[in-house]
Image (cartoon, rainbow, N blue to C red; front, side):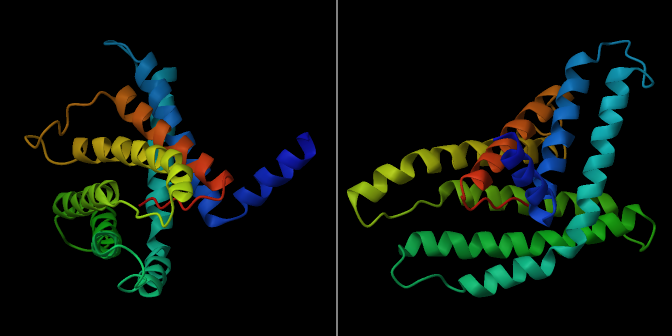
Length: 219
């Protein structure tokens, strides 16, 4: 049993998506722990500060790795096209809009990353805000998107998966709004531990969905 689990873990970590899920969970887990342990007088060199530093480095790692995700997203978008003809029209429309938002998200984030790194001259914050807005829009469209099962049996089988998926998307959407410019809803108001908690929840759900063979899309 242990050997089989180890082989499964190694196989997952050898794939890009599997490694990204693991890094994401560790990133948010460190932020949750660091934020929860940090006090008003916490030193950056203390354990909470070091955990938050690890979280920031892992987040930067994921941003750099997403430089190579454009083609994968384009392939998925082209494969879906306008959606299968037998699918509900509203679901197809929301899915297409979601794909467009995801496709635009990547180049916007790349420009923001390049501006931060000093590679190009641009207002990085503007591009970060735009990319975060597109991610939030994608998550919102994903929440609104509903399925139209062909039978009552299929409907019952999908309820649990849809509820779990919506929970992950709501958690990510909450964080996405937090990272938008202050003044919009609760933007900028979450403490680090809450950001870490929401991200950890969505990350663990993504790992669960992947282990169950579900289709987990995360920007």
